Length: 69
Image (cartoon, rainbow, N blue to C red; front, side):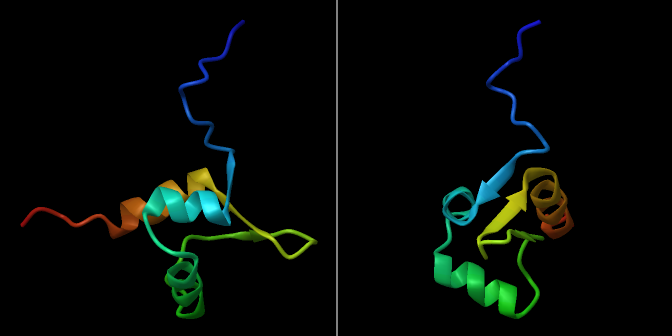
């Protein structure tokens, strides 16, 4: 069975540059957000690199979505 490559996998992990590009922010902004606990959840790999689960990013974005008045 073929898999649709256009559908994002919710178990995918984004790298820091991928996340920054997706959100339209700089790396500095991301690290500032991490310092104040306002960044998407991350997994820290043994090599120190961060990965951001796409499913967690989706939840993080929904939590910050403005509601219509």
